[in-house]
Image (cartoon, rainbow, N blue to C red; front, side):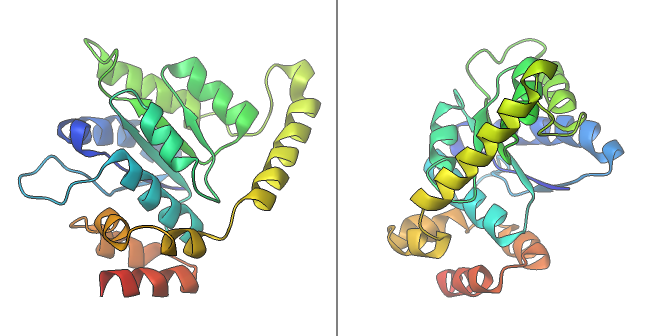
Length: 212
């Protein structure tokens, strides 16, 4: 699985710490981490949590990433932004039990985490424990055992509802402020990572048009 890490501007300084915790856990599992920033370096393009949603949607819908780990100060804004787009099911994950239950019950493809609120001593350990529970036990298996069948049924119903209610991604993006979208893909490593891994040609062509 290819996991994309995205940080918005207020928590960019924690990017390296989050990347280290994520890689420490998931690389031994055979997963790959692509760090899309922000990296906390001077002068890099700024990402808001709204642009995290745009970038995450582009990565997931194009196949450039299978999963997105992101967040903001509380994780709430990033979660709402990601869930505003088709093809994205983002959970708000604070602790290891959140990570385990979101994976098993909701079987999503993105998480938004609080990188400021409640992030104190031992914050890096909490990240590692969350990632272990999120990625280490499969997904969509249900929890608890006596709820597996209804939970898996409800997930299929939710997928059908979302498919009915959302427009295709390119139509969504074309309705947004072009500068907002352009800023979401302006990161210094975006082109390097995205074009090497994206699979949906229509989205690839659209992103090229945005980048000029």
